[in-house]
Structures are given as structure tokens and as C-alpha cells.
Image (cartoon, rainbow, N blue to C red; front, side, top):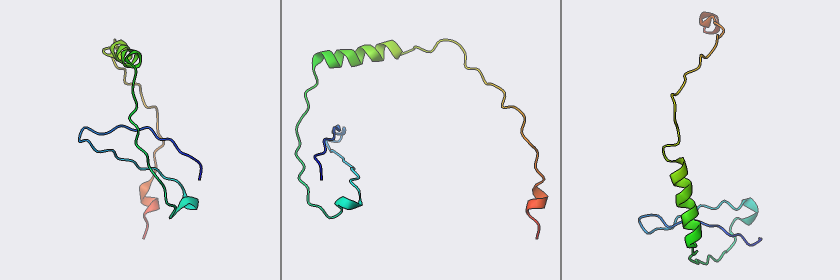
Length: 82
């Protein structure tokens, strides 16, 4: 089995949940899981906040409901004969 790195986040309840399908070839294989906290730089946090600020309220205008077009008509009685 090759080394696998998975990044996830601990939930608000303080529980880390992982669901990692490895495949049938690795069934019943013993594994070791190591937990390391990831430090996010202040620049990365600022970039994320800036992105959220740019998209918040970004939609301007009205939504348009386009016509669906014509659909064929089917005779359902012919499909459900006894």
C-alpha cells in the first residue's frame, strides 16, 4: 500500500470523521493513522476572507425562467394493457 495523505477538519463537536475507501486489495490490512495539526497562515486566511467578501452579494439582476420547449405526447393506455 502506498502512503496516503488526507486533509480534513475536526467538526464543531470536536470529532474528526474520516471515511477513506482504499479498495478491495487492501481489505484486512493493518494501518497506522498519525494526526498532525495543520497551521494555516494569516495570508491564507486573509485570501479566503477576501474571496468571501468578493462573492457575497455578487448576484445582481433578475432570475430568468426559460421555456422548456415542446415535449412529445405519449399514449399511456397502450403501455398498460392487461
